Image 1 (tube, helix red, strand yellow):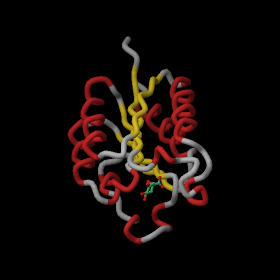
Image 2 (cartoon, helix red, strand yellow):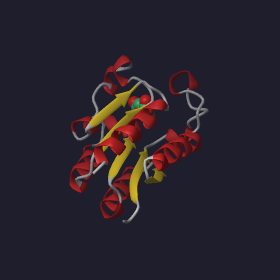
Image 3 (cartoon, protein in one colour):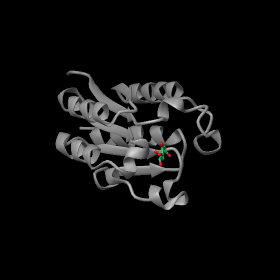
Image 4 (spheres, protein in one colour):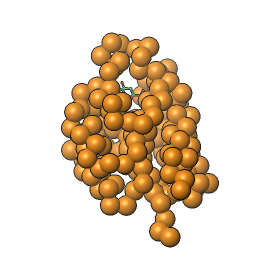
Amino acid sequence: MTERRLLLVNGPNLNLLGTRQPEIYGATTLAQIDERVAVLAAEFGLAVRAVQSNHEGVLIDQIHAARADCAGIIINPGAYSHTSVAIADALIAVELPVAEVHLSNIHRREPFRHHSYVSAVAEMVIAGAGPLGYEMAVRYLAGRLTP
Ligand code: DQA
């Protein structure tokens, strides 16, 4: 059987985790999150391809590519959550189960963060759990993908 894989997508400014507004986003770096996700996913027999970009089109290309070799997508779209119909459309197009993660609780923050276009596409949404949210997403998709 070929190895099953998750695509882990992080959007704009998430490359700065660890130093970016730590009072909101915490001290954990993206490299540490990627590592935790990979280790946990491996426990479920899942590989992970982790991508981060500050560019909407690159994120869309990565989502499209997932159709060929991924079984599910974990995505923190960052600010594109609140603006990007194009990313939501890409997620719809690839027809893979989507778990949406936000480190912060977007519903406790400014009103413009309360709506996410991706949430209408995602099977599960977790916001406000910090890096633990990514681990919850792995556990969700691992259960979801169990034959
Ligand atoms: C975020 C919340 C977004 O509103 C913000 O633009 C981000 C990060 C989060 O993880 O809490 O970049 O998605």
